[in-house]
Length: 124
Image (cartoon, rainbow, N blue to C red; front, side, top):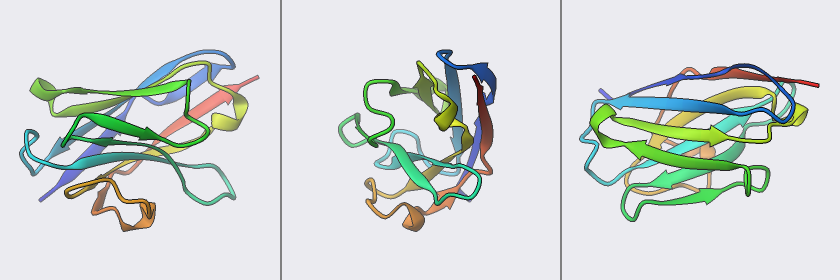
């Protein structure tokens, strides 16, 4: 069974940084898969933040993430990270990671398995 667990959320001041972790289990981390990061602010639809593709190690970033967020992977820990810098109040949301096989999906609602999310709150 595929499982994903997010961690690393919290409260940070505007301009600060956080690193979110997505630890996965239930599939071989050296296989072909995609890990998407999606966020949902109160009263708003889910928004794609980034998608890491293991096939070539590339990441696609959503508009709000470009230039501020980056992904990385720690194979030994079965973990994908989302480093978020220069956080703004509008980045406040629940952040989810989701797995898809084998590649990123432009329709975020079709990702195979979702984690439960981690809250990120940015204070002004």
